Structures are given as C-alpha cells and as structure tokens.
Length: 157
Image 1 (cartoon, rainbow, N blue to C red):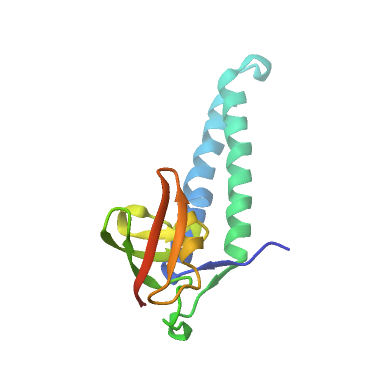
Image 2 (cartoon, helix red, strand yellow; image 1 turned 120 degrees about the vertical axis):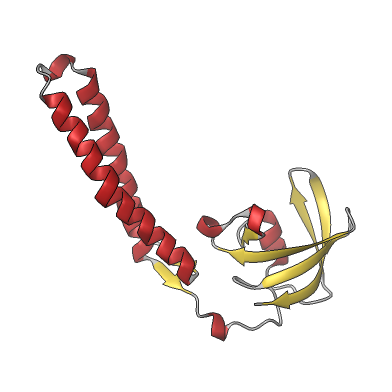
C-alpha cells in the first residue's frame, strides 16, 4: 500500500489535469506517431517506429504513476487545521537570523512546492525544521548554503 499523499484541493485538481493531458492528448499523439511510422514499411530498420514505441512505454509508465498518485491523494480539510504550531498547509512567517530577513512560507506537499510563490515542501530541510514549532521557537536548518537559524514569528492559514 502506498503512503497517503496529502494535497490541497488545487493540488489534486492540478494532478488530475496533468493525468487527463497524458491520457487524452499525449497518448493519442504517440499512437498516431506509431501508426505513421508503421506505414513507412520495414519495422526492423525503422528508427522512428522504435523511438515512438519507447516514448509510448515511458508515457504509459508515467500515466500509471500518476494514476497511483491520484488514487492515494487526500485533500486536507483546512477548516480543521489549527495555528498553534507549524504543520502542513500553515503559512508561517520566520526570521532568518543569518540574513536578518523575514520570510513567509506555506508548507505544502512536494508536488505543490514552488519557492517563487513561497510554497515549500514540508519534507524539505526548512519544512522539516519548522514542523511542529510554535511561535517564538527556533530551529537550525542545514541548507546548501550552510546552516541557518530560523525563528517562528507568526503562524496563519
């Protein structure tokens, strides 16, 4: 049994849209490529045919993986979250004591992470360091640039 994949409603809709694109757009496109290559004659020496068949195998593996991911995904009910500590889907304002800058992060699933919009994975080094911390607590996090000290200033939804 696979682990449960906790996502936001928007995250699940994005996964389903990607799966739909794979099945309804990319699969028929590759099927047409295979048919076109097959029409060109001898398959034993047809590089286009073999490339299209390989692409088809990769696509089917990706579809299978996505179907599994969607099947184990569960939407988190944001109304049941509390803001007494940092957890998935909470928005947290932290002070980076190394740079003296305040930063907002929202902790999300790995698939929804987008640093440009302030969404980080709860399994990332910073996410793991912040998990279960309360306002006023500190955490030391090792990142590629070295160790940073973060202080939790505020937790919201």
